Length: 453
Image 1 (tube, helix red, strand yellow):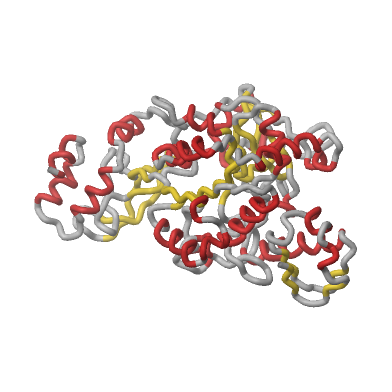
Image 2 (cartoon, rainbow, N blue to C red):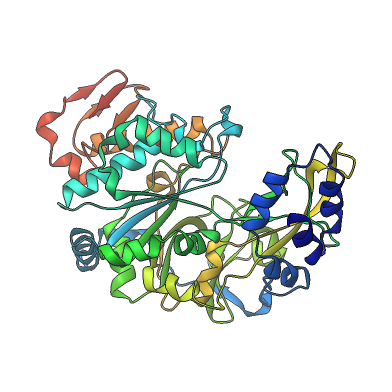
């Protein structure tokens, strides 16, 4: 009986509401949420166990970063070729984290359905799927695509892909899995009633990707189809170089468990976590955790000392994830006290002071061996869509996409006039060298908004 279960775990207040038939509490929703809650873990979290501990800042030093210029050197060739070999033999999977909604972009739908390309307004999902399809064609292999959704948008995401015939991908090679959820609680450890009548649940953080892969059977699928390396990225970045062969090759050749791409911070005050060494281990130090002495530190030349901004672009070895999700293993949880819009004991809307717990995928870095940190150029690979206008917006992302593609054309000797918008389909060219190889199919001059596909 549900009431007895709640009493056993100390949630008497919800048991009483159910017993008295409170109309604002849904028995079905409470049971659903309780069934996916690890109550023993919740008790331990409230006792302060499994929580993230910030390393002593005195032990922090700059990370060793492979510069972006390395890509153009002769030494890069063997790593790129190794990455291409791994892709070609089916050892690499793409994994996109896509649990968010597009509310800040004016839609109540998965963020991945937002139209972001500068000429055709292709959705984020379409761009990422076309990059995976282009990779599959280029290397004569079916690159699997894993998509992490949320409880809120899973059905809509699956429907969107099905409604667009998976954008040309074989649906057998597209795998959806749902991110885990965890209850928020009061500071006394009481579950909070959501406006829908269940427990107030929040996603368990992007670190939950790893446990969700295991719980949903995706790690087993990867193992069975021969996937060794997982290229991880977030849905809101249309410029991401999916399964970049150089990055994969560096990661694999150097026997890294987990590798990361970084960009140079715009300035000292850009609110982004940086990758640095602490206690001899690589880790991300969040902007809010940096002291002023660290944030504004400079080197002997007066340049920013801690400049490698975290992009949330990683390559992770499947075997490493299996280790991290094995018995008794987990990433540390971050604890945050926030105002939660919920229901009080009378069923009235109220802002409740609550505690949220979540895990971050970058907390796996200090547990990894031989981390490769590779710099990339922001304008080439990072144009996130987070807002409608301003910095990191739909507006700025479209401009950056067009500017990058225009630069490819100009490098190939093609004139792009005025403010013409340019969009190159991934199916026509995944990168600049692919475009140069198809120069005979292109006009010599572009004087208006142009789509090349």
